[in-house]
Length: 427
Image (tube, rainbow, N blue to C red; front, side):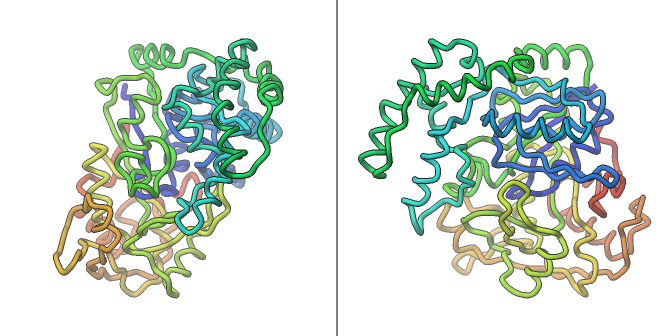
């Protein structure tokens, strides 16, 4: 049985939660391998809508074990609040596993995130202010706090004191903020220890044993390919690796054990935060996509920037992730347009380019080159097979598949769990 990676092929918010939930009934483990509560998934199950921020979407599937891998950064207060909210709605959260090597977001990380972003002014990145970046920075600087540190008060105090030696200097002398007491941070963190202890495990060992035993393991990325710290639109990116390689480093499962890599594509394009966006629409069409598609961030509450489908980005995602399949979401949102533009290339300083420019400057100045495909007006939310779609909708899907470089194996035609056309099996 396969191990699969499921990730965003654009700037995030493509509908990964629905895709994960669709597979959840056939999957034994769902693993979040990077990011923190700066990501969010909306999953609709029957009449119930769930907004997940840190927990893997598989937590909504009975029989599935949800895992927070070592590559995730965890805000313990947010995690416990999310668990409590699901428990109150009758969702069984007892099977959750958390890697002891995952790093903790502390109060000083959130403080630094917010003051730094304000300090940058017009050069700000557009972070969520939730401490994600500073936590990853501490991880790389080897002054991070890990989940396992909650269970050794002496080590926890030593690590917090070491981290604050420098940070308090920055807060006081650069940002004119009050220094943070290490003892206060430690007291708050220790308050979470017993509530989390039962969830903490050696998840790398558990996941490798599961794959070796023939279990189906699904690795779920947050954000999207173009927000990857190495392969995204740097510096307007997240602080981790949502791309397929991040699934290995963020879980401890090697690449030879992964058999499928599924990219989630929205039938148009959105992004949240600052940074270049070649197909962005600042007109009535952009507002219509935002309104019809309900394009507001699950975690941030910010309106998403909207634009037409960008095949250059899709091809890039196929390349850097080694995608084997696409899941195309929100096709129903495009119903009603007489013709639909699709970006097939860019023009950069008068030159047509069909691959994503590696230069930040070139991408910033890239202008979309559009082809126009005929639209459709029929309601497609009841479609169960590809042939149920109007001819023009079928042609749109086929065109996107050819332009993007991997087969479209599933199509979302509405927000509900059952409003999906399965073209090819992922398993």
